[in-house]
Length: 73
Image 1 (cartoon, one colour):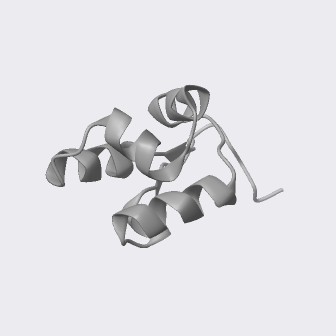
Image 2 (cartoon, helix red, strand yellow):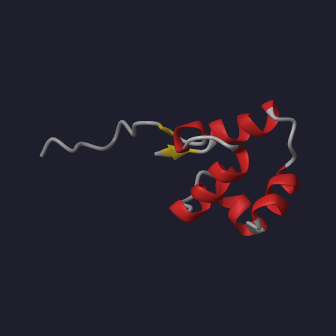
């Protein structure tokens, strides 16, 4: 699972509100809701966030392994 928790923490660290980043990047409320619930967002959105926050994608997302998945088969 991909988590956007680092993105939300980065906003706190930079003392930015979600509204601020939405205005800065032009992303919609629906996209912000997806980020809040760890739903899929496109790389275009990640690119916009990286540009606005002057960071790398790894600063916005983290991978959390799902213990129910078995890719060894």
